[in-house]
Length: 95
Image (cartoon, rainbow, N blue to C red; front, side, top):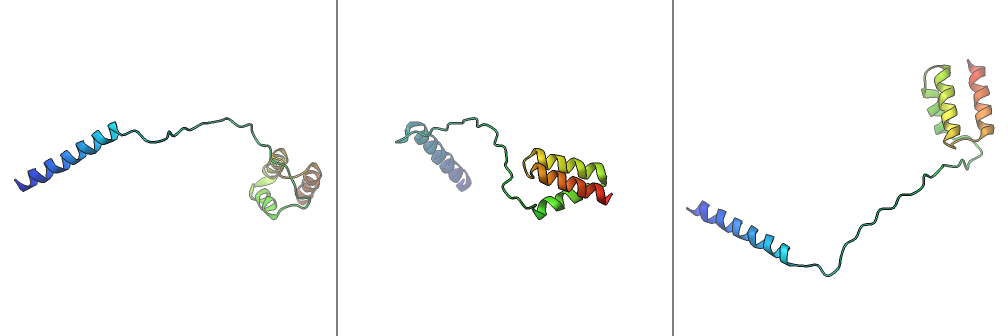
C-alpha cells in the first residue's frame, strides 16, 4: 500500500511539472541561425619546411605514395611551389 502511495505521488508531481512547462512562457526567445560559409583555403606562411610535413611525407610507403603526399601537401597550401620542387628532387634522389 505504501509503495502505491509513493508511486501515485511521483506520478502526480510529474503531471504537475508537465502542466507547468506547458503553461509557463519564458521571458525571452531563443533563436538559432545557421549560415553557410565559403571554404577557407589554407595559405603557407612559413618559408622553412615544418618537421611535421617531413614526417607525414615519409609515412607513405614507396615512391608513388610519397610523391602523392607531396602533391597533396602542395594542393592544400601547406608548402609552396619552390618547397614542392625541392622536396620532389630530394625524394627522387633518395630512390
